[in-house]
Image (cartoon, rainbow, N blue to C red):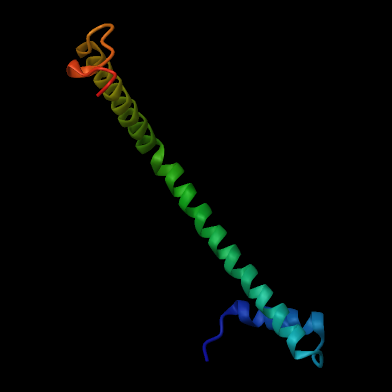
Length: 101
């Protein structure tokens, strides 16, 4: 069976903490907790690497995204203003509809 370096370290830590002749359940729980910590550390390391790569290459992409967002918001604002100009001032009900209909 293939063993990772972390498996050997976890076995050594479990043996040192619980002793060689300790309760099997206790040593199993400790080993699984340590495996969970290793997985969490790997996930955090990958996330940090992604964030660093994004930061290194993403400064231009970030500025581009900001420009695109501003352009979209300006367009939305222009659309709203043009629709407001189309409405007649003081018109309460569109297309001749009154309160009763």
